[in-house]
Image 1 (cartoon, one colour):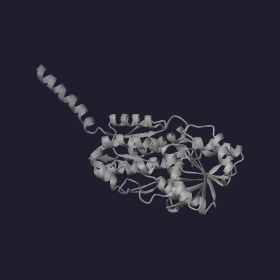
Image 2 (cartoon, rainbow, N blue to C red):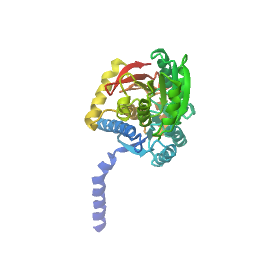
Image 3 (cartoon, rainbow, N blue to C red):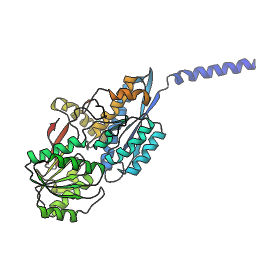
Image 4 (cartoon, rainbow, N blue to C red):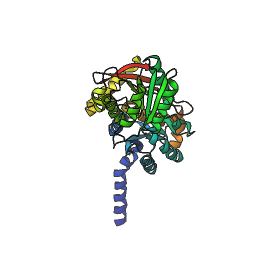
Length: 378
C-alpha cells in the first residue's frame, strides 16, 4: 500500500511539472559589446539601447525555432574602447556560450576580438566598425551592416575637393585602427588637393596645441580628423581658440548629436561636415523616423549614432536563426551568409567577405547646433 502511495505521488508530481517543462522556452543568448565606460560611453550606451529594443521586439513576437518557443536574452559586456579589454570580454562571451555577437563599436576592439569569435565558431555582426581589415581576414564568422572605410573615407575625400573646394588639407588621426583607416582612405579620395600636414594624437588626448600650431602655419582650408567625437569636439574648440578658420571634416566617429555639446560654438553653421557609414533613401525614411520616435519615447533622448544599426544587427541574426530553424551557430551561420532582412536601415544582405551589399553613406553638417542631413550616397 505504501509503495503504491509513493508511486502515485511521484506520478502526480511529474504530471504537475511535466507541461511546464515541455513548454519551457529555449533561451537564445545574444552578446553585445561596446564602450559603456570611458569617453565614448554615450555611444556604447546608445548601441546597448538599440540592442535592448530589438530583443524586446523579438520576444513580443513569440517566435518559435525548431518548433519550440524561444526567449532572446542579451549578455552585455563593456570593452571600454580598449583592445585588450575587448579580447577579454570576447572570451567571456564565448565562455557564456552565446549564440551570436553584435559588436564591437570600434575597429580597434572589433578586429582583435573577431579572431576569438572565429575560433569559437560564433557569428559576429558589427553595427559600426568600418576598418576594411575586419572582413578581409577570411573569417567566415565576420559580418557588418555599414559601409567600410574605403567607401566612407574615400567619399569624404572626394566631397572635400569637388564640393567644398578644398585645395590645402591637413589630416589628423587618433592612431586607432578606425582613425588611421578612415584618414588613409580620405587622403586617397582627396585627389587634386595638397595635403599640407599630417599629424596624429591619441583617443584619450585633451591638449592639441602643438599639432594645431603646426597646422595653423600651413594655412589649410580644411582639416580632416580620423577619430571619435570625444576627441574631435575638444579638438574643434582648440582650432577656434587658435584662430584656425578651416572647415572641419570627419567620419562617422565625430558625426554625432553630441558633437555640438563637445565642441561648443566651434561647431558653427557651415564649419563641420561628416558622414555616417549608413543611411536610408527617402522611400525608407519613415521607417527610420518611426524608430527614432520610439527610441526617444523609451529613453527620453535622441539616437546618438548607431542604435538603428545595432537593432538591425540583432534582427538579422534572429532572421538567420529562423531561416535555419536553429539557434546553433554551426547550423545558422550558412543562412546568415545568404540572409535577406529588410531592416530599419534598409535591405541587409552580405557579400562574400561579410560586408553589406550596396552600403550607403549619409552626409551631414551642423546648423543651429543640430546635426542636419544633407544627402544619402550609394
